[in-house]
Image (cartoon, rainbow, N blue to C red; front, side, top):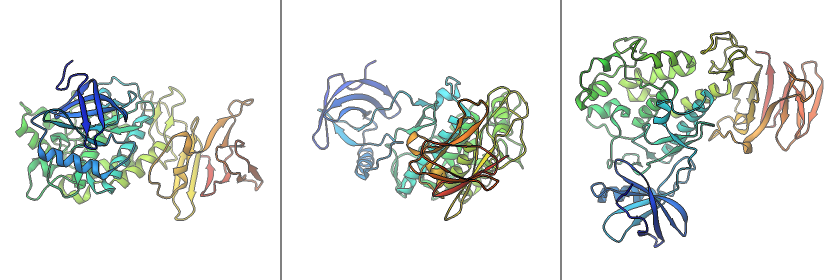
Length: 443
């Protein structure tokens, strides 16, 4: 596979750092990506096709580099690069192999889990929220720019070279099937920004959880040729949610759209309501679109209350505060709800509900009223459900912090639990976690 830059080509950053091209990694719509090596180590280089290497694109990327935005969820442009002839590109970190593209997921080529998908959705929402908080609109949120780890749900946003400051009019408007309806229609005054990003984000989130586009139902099947004019009708002029409760003109076809008909019922009502809001009122009025904070609250609650079926072992998404067990999506047997840990932060008071499923964990963000980010790694671990080594079926809550807990049983008996120790799990158990208090409920 050959590209615009030959192996061994020497290039220079704007600051004078030299590098050598090691090989071609891939290509896309705007340019090619190479592996390069220099004093900075191994990096990835996006090199623009001649037709895309415009002065406008230079200014966009140069401004992004100048912002110095550092976030491990983004392959952010780090330095401008020029070569011996005309042309330019930019440096970024190399994408680790553990991250896979969403098209692999949609083709069912990945072994993943509902837990990983919900986690990926939560991390995705928080990543774009972090970008928006800096006054930057991404403008091209789609399945082509997001990668995730199918094992744990970590995400990585790539192709960040079209993001601009809120209100700027340069660059692209997005990918048609992810664009907000007002952009597809070309409404007067409509322009890409954080408000239109919210629509794109919701489309991508729906696809992540259902493997289907929210606006592709029977109306798409009635189109003989899905050309640009047809796409503008489907996504802009007459968009209808496939599960619009008041309009069934675009409902899923039972033969052609079996996947979404099977996956939609597995989505808990707390998420279904947000999707309905975003793709009914939100299609007509941008101010009614679901905000990142709403998504992150709902997704984190759903993640905390996933239940594993005792009969077939499949993970089930459940309504966070529901006490009546539902049925497993796979085997249709009634689910057994594990005990619930209710964590209440001190001030301001926020209540969180965690299902104490096998190997359940409590993290630092559970003790915060409004965490800036949900981190599920070992560094943030606070408590963990463990099984008694000599008494199978008996469980306890292990202290994974560096401080001693104060606990109280339902009979009033108190116990101090030092770091590394475990307190037996019983209904009514109260645990002082410092920043929050936790109580074990039977259901």
